[in-house]
Length: 188
Image 1 (cartoon, rainbow, N blue to C red):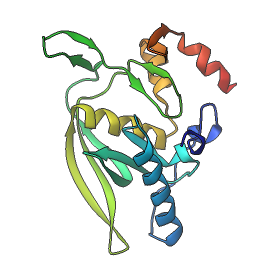
Image 2 (image 1 turned 180 degrees about the vertical axis):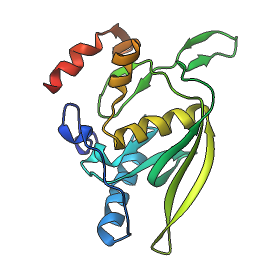
Image 3 (image 1 turned 120 degrees about the horizontal axis):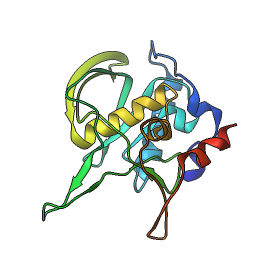
C-alpha cells in the first residue's frame, strides 16, 4: 500500500489541484483507487488525490470505517482561534495531539488547527456534482484541514516550521525529537 502513496519530497505534493467540473469514467476510477488505498491503510484518517499522484481537487476521509469522498472541498469559516489540539485522558491528563501524514512515514508533529470549521464540498449523485455543507469539530475538523491543505500544496511540516511546533521521528515505539528543517532540506 505504501508504494502507491507519493512520498515527500515528490513535487506533486506541492501542486495546487485543479477544480473538478464534470464527472467522467477517469475521475470515477481515480476515486475508486483513492478509496481502496485509504480503506487498506491501517492508520490513515484521510488521503488527498495529490498523495496518489493525481492533481485534482478531491480527497477521502474515513468516517466510522467508511471512506467519504469529498470533491472540491472548501473550508468556508472557522470558529475560535488556531490552537495546538490536545488529547485528554480519562484521568484528566493532557498530552499533545501529534499529527502525521501518510506521505511522511514515521514522522509526527504538533500543528495549530481550528477545532470547529464550516465546510462545503461536492458529492457525485447520478453522475452529477451536488454541493453539501456541514460544520465539523474536533478530530474531523483537524483531518479536513490537513487533507484540504494537500490540495493547495501545503504540508503539515510547513505549519510545524512556521509555528515552531514540535516534530518527532517515531520508530519501534521510540519518539525522537527532530528539527523540521532537516526534513524540508530534502526538497531542495
